[in-house]
Length: 150
Image (cartoon, rainbow, N blue to C red):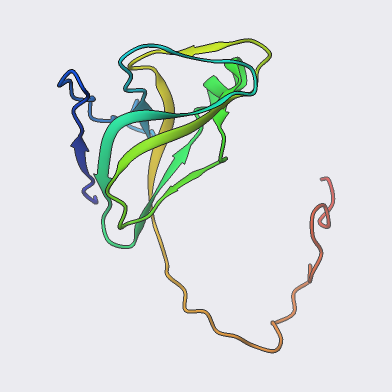
């Protein structure tokens, strides 16, 4: 098992954010929580960067993926504005979750609300190799929808 160093950053009141946790023993990602001094209301289609109060030190050749919480996105319409957030190994700043309200109603985010998930994954840094041609495949250059619906 890899170690993930987590620094809890104090807010203006001196409070520390809770350390993220896995919800169950089978969870693949840990919950990220809003770290707010006061509730934040997002109007329909409004975006905001919500602080988590934590910074991390990823193991070498690992990345942090910030993912939407499926229930929050499906039931309330609050999801990530950037689809998936990527945290590079050398980033040491606070994790901010860029969220968007895709619902037709205002959504209020409160301190401690679970707003996203953090997954730590290994990374392969491939060496770019320019070439004239690529090896052929059955699919070839077929793009969106080229493999059919079923």
